[in-house]
Amino acid sequence: MTPVVSVITVCFNAARDLQKTIESVRKQSYNNIEYVIVDGGSQDGSRELIAASGDVVSKWVSRSDKGLYYAMNDGLDMASGEYVLFLNAGDVFFECSTLEKIFSLSPSDMDIYYGDTMICDSSGKSVGRRRLKLPVQLSAKSFRWGMSVCHQSVLIRRSICSHYDTAYRITADYDWVLSAIERADQNKICNTGLFVSCFQQGGLSSRHIKKANLERFVIMKKHYGLVQSLWFNFLMVFRLLFTYCKLGRI
Image (cartoon, rainbow, N blue to C red; front, side):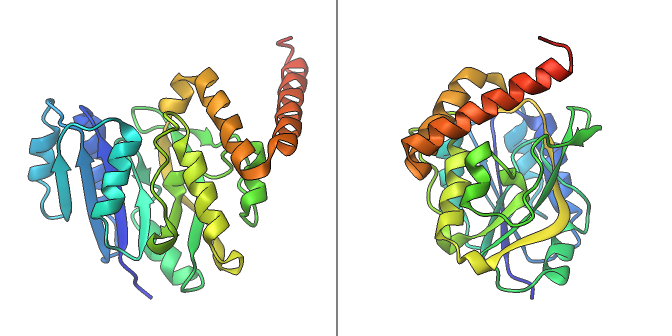
């Protein structure tokens, strides 16, 4: 099974990070990749870099947009593969054979394939895996504790993907992945058992923690209702305080 995977990258004035991502896609041993880049009208050489990468870039556009999730929606509209995966500027595949391993070692015809994520600094050095443990079996319930899987490590069948809800400025990816899981055949969600991507720390939500938490609560209320959302947020705060107490920070 070798379905076409649309890898989508959005970027803005991030030529150095974009170079890493392009190289990572270029080095994939899997051949059925449609690589889509949406650039926000960069002035730092990104457009020239993309134009010079025609051996790997299938489709691209460079124009001003209203923000990150608008650009990601543009990428979805441009994509034509059976599956989509977002790797934004600075994010890379965990290894050169990542996609090949996913489709050779996992059951075929899944709605969603997911795996673990390694966190890296701006130099590409690993600083450890994500804090949230990857669910053995991903479901909507997995997201009651937060973003239980990085969207950089989730391949989703394009036919069940919605647009990102641009009403959320910071955490629309949380809503997007959760919505896709709710649409998926629950028997066709596959834990690959692999590390899929290396995520460059310092993303949008980490720079706007308070607003991200408020948006996340609104999204939880949308999917789980008010009572469950309040309860799980209370438990998350309690667990955080308990952890800080154990570390002697309180």
